[in-house]
Length: 101
Image (cartoon, rainbow, N blue to C red; front, side):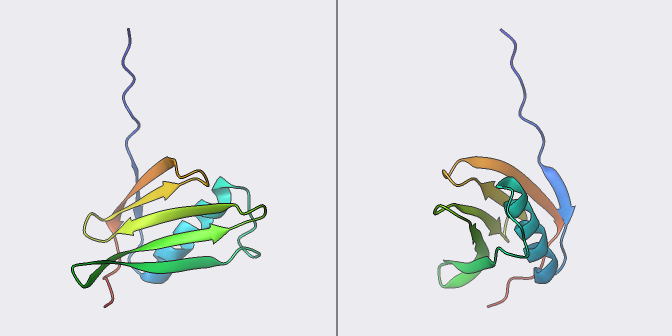
C-alpha cells in the first residue's frame, strides 16, 4: 500500500494587515466562487490570555454559506476552512503583520 504525503503548505508574504486581509479575502471568495466586490470580509480578533494572538476571517455568501480562515500570528500561518468546517488549505507566512492590541 502506497502512502501519499500531504502537500507542503504554500508560503506567502503579507507584511501588513491590509495585505493579509486582501489575500484571505481572495482565497475565501475563490473557494466558493464568490465575487469579492459583492462579498464583505469580516474579522474577529482571537484573544489568548488577554492578548490578541490572531484573527478569524469569514465571508458569507448565498444560502447561509460561510467560509472562514484563522490567522495565528504566533505560528505565522493561515488555515482556511470551507463552509462545512473542513480544513482545506494551510498557508505559511514568510512575512506577517504585527498583532495590534
